[in-house]
Length: 619
Image (tube, rainbow, N blue to C red):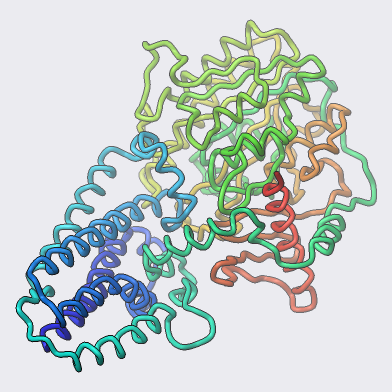
């Protein structure tokens, strides 16, 4: 009977140690990021202490099957019961090793853990492969194999005990079933307290990378999948009475005067929207970034209006597309572009302009299937859609598709033949990993984001060439260029993914069509990417009331606020206040609000998310 007790305890200990092994690999893999953030070693070691309760809870779930096997073996112990145990544990070791390796790559790009949202992207495995640098992809494969073999070998050779021909002991079996299940159930819940354990138990640091390292991978995935899916047919973001939320949001948008500053020389300009993949505000000198990364963008500012307080509501390209073209804010859990039955109800900026005679086109050097963007773009009614597979075979490509210089050149060639007025959008590619752009890499700094800033330097160089060529075309003088990021990206400053700094993006209106007195100016309005629709339409003297989430940034009386969504919560920014909140952990990543207005500001942000998600959930 001692063997059965020892077997149970040793298997339990194995999981605690194996979880920590994967955690060590995670921390070593992201060591450059830890060093860049100058995190003290003492704080890093806290990961192993604060992870313990969640690891114990996960282990208790894992040990349910071994418990029943050991209980049976205390009564009857044929050898094949051992094989069942080995197969079961092998599957779990395989699954956890895979999650640990996958999380290494996901965190580097998305600053998040494996979740329900991430799992949905596995329906397009080729996109996952293409989005990763080849060296990184194969290195993660090697790490996965290492973790799996190390875990399996140590389990079989060190921790596992064969149970065979044990003497039957009914008293022991009775005590075993009396004592162990309550222990397992208590461990699953994290104790006997009323509220079961959740991920917040592992949060302890201002450096979110340490918090995420502490949270057990599969426990987090379990919560994300099995807690979110059952609630998917109802709004999980109900913070208050719906009528109260509507009243709060209505007050947020209330403007004392409906007017606008007219910045254009004509009311029906051509419009070209250049959507920059993953551009952070930290790439732009005049948005607080280091100089020298995007010198061509800096030149363009002299011929336009720079918005210096604009944020991306989401962190994915498909969320950016919904925001730019339909003025629909991003939200947690999913994205409206992946559900055609929902996005067909949205307004469309291209369709709005088509109704008044605009000819439309869309260009992208990659494949639009990712995030169901292709369906959404087609819904938007573009007359011409050109993606990677539509370009001639002779055009140079990288792993993700056609390089930016060739996509931009193709658009210019086509616009020369395009009937005016036109609305043309182009989505760049080269500032997405694997950074295989065909240009020099002159920036020898940036630490963990060295490749990213050099990719931005390349795209910026392409923009410079693009505008120099465009300026020679007869349609240029009547064209408004809107340059905006689809979302932000981790920068050399390594902001937390939930922070407002991480979500800050560039937005520039430029072109000869802008009145001379406004060229080179900066608009300080606080706003979002999805404010482009109302801002543009106001300049064209067109109604924008159907784009209800969008506000006119050139109206001096427009309220200043910005919203963004996090993995499971909301970020909310006012001139004098800001917070970032995660619902699943009931955790505030940031809370910079004066006590006198704290309740009202918190209610604003939560009411906003509640109504955005409520609209998304509507059939």
